[in-house]
Length: 60
Image (cartoon, rainbow, N blue to C red; front, top):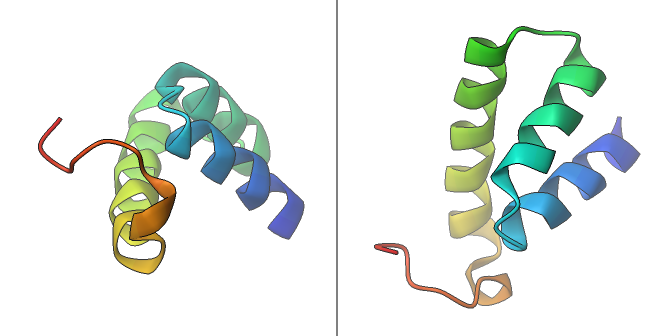
Protein backbone atom coordinates (compact mmCIF):
# COMPACT_ATOMS: atom_id res chain seq x y z
CA UNK A 1 0.00 0.00 0.00
CA UNK A 2 2.98 2.34 0.50
CA UNK A 3 3.65 2.41 -3.25
CA UNK A 4 0.07 3.55 -3.85
CA UNK A 5 0.42 6.34 -1.28
CA UNK A 6 3.69 7.49 -2.85
CA UNK A 7 1.97 7.85 -6.21
CA UNK A 8 -1.07 9.56 -4.68
CA UNK A 9 1.11 11.90 -2.62
CA UNK A 10 3.10 12.89 -5.70
CA UNK A 11 -0.11 13.75 -7.55
CA UNK A 12 -1.34 15.81 -4.61
CA UNK A 13 1.90 17.73 -4.20
CA UNK A 14 2.04 18.39 -7.95
CA UNK A 15 -1.55 19.71 -7.82
CA UNK A 16 -2.88 16.91 -10.01
CA UNK A 17 -6.16 16.32 -8.19
CA UNK A 18 -7.81 14.31 -10.97
CA UNK A 19 -4.89 11.89 -11.17
CA UNK A 20 -4.89 11.64 -7.37
CA UNK A 21 -8.60 10.79 -7.30
CA UNK A 22 -8.13 8.20 -10.04
CA UNK A 23 -5.23 6.62 -8.14
CA UNK A 24 -7.24 6.58 -4.90
CA UNK A 25 -10.22 4.96 -6.61
CA UNK A 26 -7.96 2.28 -8.10
CA UNK A 27 -6.05 1.62 -4.87
CA UNK A 28 -9.05 1.52 -2.55
CA UNK A 29 -11.74 0.36 -4.98
CA UNK A 30 -14.07 3.14 -3.85
CA UNK A 31 -16.53 5.51 -5.44
CA UNK A 32 -15.93 9.09 -6.44
CA UNK A 33 -17.35 10.63 -3.25
CA UNK A 34 -15.21 8.45 -1.00
CA UNK A 35 -12.14 9.15 -3.14
CA UNK A 36 -12.67 12.90 -2.86
CA UNK A 37 -12.97 12.60 0.93
CA UNK A 38 -9.79 10.52 1.08
CA UNK A 39 -8.03 13.06 -1.14
CA UNK A 40 -8.96 15.90 1.21
CA UNK A 41 -7.86 13.94 4.28
CA UNK A 42 -4.55 13.02 2.65
CA UNK A 43 -4.00 16.60 1.47
CA UNK A 44 -4.54 17.87 5.02
CA UNK A 45 -2.16 15.20 6.36
CA UNK A 46 0.55 16.11 3.84
CA UNK A 47 0.20 19.83 4.59
CA UNK A 48 0.97 19.04 8.24
CA UNK A 49 3.60 16.34 7.72
CA UNK A 50 5.44 17.72 4.67
CA UNK A 51 4.74 21.46 4.37
CA UNK A 52 8.01 22.17 2.55
CA UNK A 53 6.98 19.89 -0.33
CA UNK A 54 4.29 22.36 -1.37
CA UNK A 55 5.23 25.32 -3.55
CA UNK A 56 1.96 27.20 -3.02
CA UNK A 57 0.34 28.57 0.09
CA UNK A 58 -2.44 26.66 1.81
CA UNK A 59 -4.94 29.37 0.80
CA UNK A 60 -4.36 28.85 -2.94
